[in-house]
Image 1 (cartoon, rainbow, N blue to C red):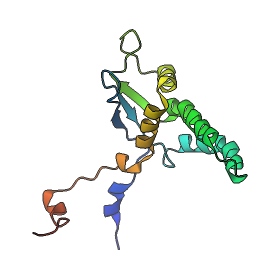
Image 2: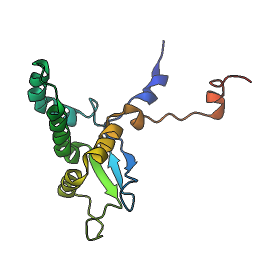
Image 3: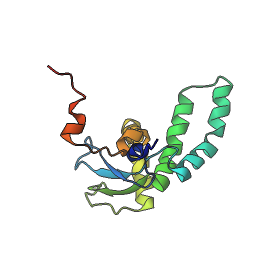
Image 4: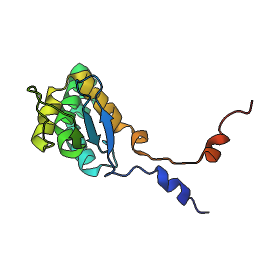
Length: 146
C-alpha cells in the first residue's frame, strides 16, 4: 500500500511560520521554525543542556526553579535555532530593530515570562507547522448531516 498521502503532514524543520505578539504595541511578528525534535540543532542542544534538570527531576527535586531554568535555556536557544526573522519589532526609542542574532537574543531576554512562554508554546506545537490544504468537498464529509 502507498501512504504517500500522509507526507503532507510531516513537519519540515526549515519551514517558518509567523507568530504575532498582539500584546506588544505595533504587534510585532516573529518568524519561527519548529522548536522540537525535527529541528535537530535546537533539540540536540536542548537535550545537552537539560541533563542537569533531568538529574534534579529524577531525584524528586522538581520545582519552579527547574521551569525557570528550562525557560532560561530557551531564551538562549531560540535566537540561535528558532527565530529566523521578524517584522515590526521596535526598540524602546521606537526604531525598527534589524533582524540580527544579537537583537533576537536581547528581545527574548526582554520579553516577560508569560509572553516568552506564548512564543514557546507556538513553536513547540507541530500543528502550527503543518499545512493541510483540501477542497470543500474533501472536508464536507466531516460534518454531521442535518
